[in-house]
Image (cartoon, rainbow over the protein chains, first blue to last red):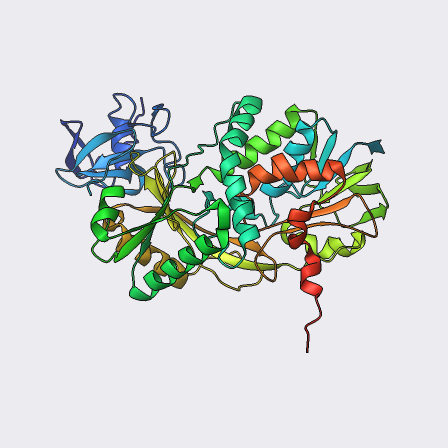
Length: 98
Length: 371
């Protein structure tokens, strides 16, 4: 879907997107990693269940919410990838344990 | 120049409720409203139909509040019928949490006073120990000493309410003139002219429901509407699966899932900014009440200005100098929306504020103190 600009010196890390390991440049945001390895919506909305993906890429629109390392509703465009990071779709509204 | 049956100055929840009521009764209504820069309590609102904490020391206000809460189901159903908008009204009651002995003593005193003053209307409440509170509201924290539960209370989405009021009035043949700040009203008995937003409109009736702006406009109608702003700061969390259908007075979960947390009471003039001190206190109280809230992220903080009369109660008045000119103002526009649409609008059409609402005239502020 998206193509990366060439960067031969990019240091790569491996992140796990929906249980699939992929290599992305170390300076990528999670949203960029997801767009570069796009397989479908990165979340569904809490009220209507509409499918969504990253949009503004600057922390404003909240359409890139994902579960990152077990923490739900993270703004994927505001989080930089790290080695071994687990990235999952955000399905509707999160729950919270009492 | 165009003519209509009634001009409403102010298009917030109060003006919108009146306009809906008037239009529903068949009047041709024109609403003049400011633009997005307006100081607008309706857009900052917490969304409570609040009964439990209303009217200790003023049984007329308690009765009026109860009457509105009882009408709310019909009111919101009517709005949905006209607009297709569900304002997420629910009436599961209020479970208020007390965090100190002092708060608890005050709460019991207030509830008992409301009951004593309610007379034959009655007022039922339950005092709950922490275990009973936990049964009612899962997740209650160890700092909650006790609670009080009433079934009269409810809540809704104030933003959908505002939108549906506008749409309903429009659908019933009303007009809404936006970016039309009213500075001058030409008044004669049963004949009013407003020129704003490039439009000139005349009508035999005019309703002043301009929130804090009413104070400045009232003298042009021979009315005295003394109001002051009181700031309230609020927080809302990220959206969570629905888990709380009642409200807790200072905490409610919206239909979309966010937990709204309130609120401060400050004199800050017209400053609608937020402060970390006040928001910190709001957040502290919320997590002391429901500790699981610490695991949720705050996504937005904002402030609004309550519209307070000198004794905090509503003002309903008709001008004696210019009959046909009415003022409607209060700080509980959501709670009272149902009586404003169903009852006050009819009083305005009839041309008279009835005796049971005479205690809400602003003349009460001008009683000479006896020596």
